[in-house]
Length: 274
Image (cartoon, rainbow, N blue to C red; front, side, top):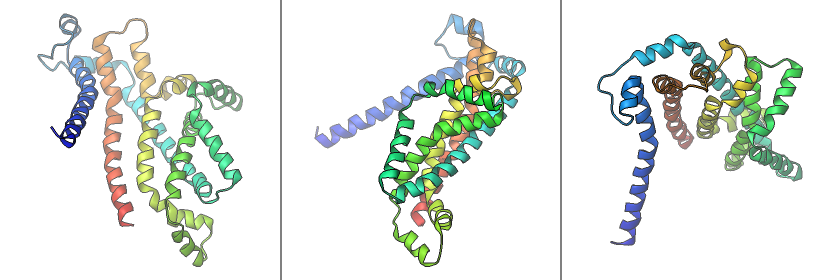
């Protein structure tokens, strides 16, 4: 066996192992959600003999699923738009004006990336309590935006740095100011970067459990993760409730992921044409 064939076999095996490792827990979760508690206890690794929908009916009737999904979607999309817009605006001068001050700002941004999220929990809670932003959509959106801005700025700075400066010079010859250059020249070229960044931000915001649990107290404002947690509890978790609740909590994110995955391909194609 040649080295090239050996390398190809190892690469293909690694892909298969990765795909199986990712899909098996998902398949198991979906399969268990259609089984009764008795079936799960008798055969924990068995497949459902029939598609029992009573588990889903129980979950949907016992928790405010649609309201919590709407809350999660609204918060996630608002944070994604703010992070992309503010991050790209901040990254543009940092990428073009390379001096001691901008290097210091990028160092602070890197420190923000390296700071564990649990370190900021107490300061954010105290600040929001003092300014009256606890238990509000504005507060949770601002908190998630602040947490994800360092990633956005660092991400966009590297991307904008690769854009040829000749495009900006040609725009300045047409008497364009900095804002016009950003809005009409730089921003349209950020499609692939924005789509990729949006995926990361959406995953982090949707799956986050700590900050919604800390900052939101009204049940009508809970995200889907908090609603699932409140429904299941932490003392006596029942499998016939756990698995369908997990499926329902992950389903909207999967749909959003598929939508934005298509936009990544469209963004890459648009960037190649431009």
